[in-house]
Image (cartoon, rainbow, N blue to C red; front, side, top):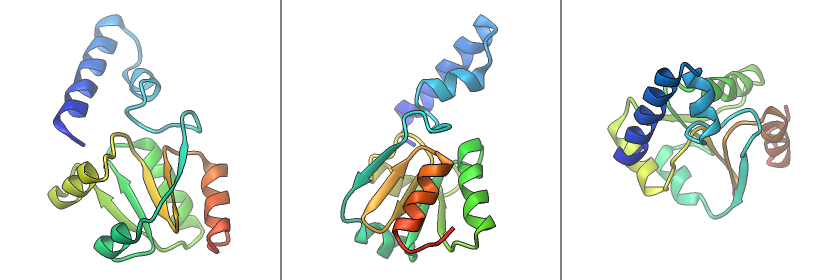
Length: 135
């Protein structure tokens, strides 16, 4: 997460508190956290460099406080899918990787030649199935 997105998150939360609106609702609906199928994006690409750097064939970029990241991890764990997690608010190297990949919302999951930005259970299951990770 870069400085600009952190500052934006702080401002959105401050505004939410000032207006008496749930901060989580505003953060989710401004696209700072991927959420519930809304705004989920599947992107094709060659992600071999991501896998080589992370040391796994499924890579999850997350924040330790992100509820959608936790849901993605729960789904992967429930179905015994092996993945490498890169927690960008706890690991400086992971944050630099995320900045280099232009990750500005989480979760981002790399599987094969596709990445999923945001979280939608059905889309994640479909993506896993497509890449031979039967769920």
